[in-house]
Amino acid sequence: MSEDAVQAILKQPDTYTEKGKRDAFLLLFLYKTGARVQELVDIRLCDIQLGKYPKVTIHGKGAKTRSIPLRDDVVQHLKKYLALFHPEQNLFSEQYLFYVIRNQNRKRMTEDNVRKLIAKYGVQARKICKEVPENVHPHLFRHSWAMVLYQNGVDLTLISQWLGHSNLETTLIYAHADTELKRKALEKAVPVESPLKEHLNAERYKVSDEELLKRLCGLK
Image: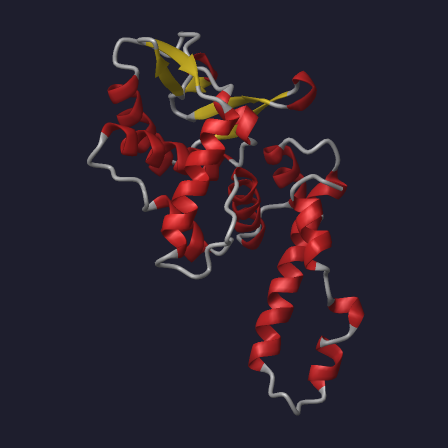
């Protein structure tokens, strides 16, 4: 997703309500950690460290863990979230960071809970920003953040570690995706009659959108 699309979605929750405040932070945290949806809902308070170098421990595939640094803006929102939703807990607690209330008890938020709320805010955001995809799902936030890191010069090896990829080849898709974005931008800028246009349309410069989506979503 484009940055405009992401921001449009992040602004959708009604932060005048308690649920809206929860959803707003969840969307932001999902985006800026690059976590998979299962990794997000598995985070417990004891996985968070707020010190000189704030970070969250992510429990990924194959029982592997990785540490994700938390930016200042995320930390500020995190502290507000903790004060509102975990006022009686400390960061040694086994409580889940994100939860729902059932029968007056806190239960771990499910992956379906997250998917549904993201889809809902995606539909709302699309009404004001046409760059928002028709079907917004959690993986789009993960890959959008990876693209932000790559476009800001973060090494692919570090991005691979950040995302918890088992091999660097999976991460290389972001380099291909960035090249495709640049190619499309250049196509718009180059006059139709320009000789360069023929080279831009060459098959070797193109990336199949279907193939790209499969790779990004881990389907291939």
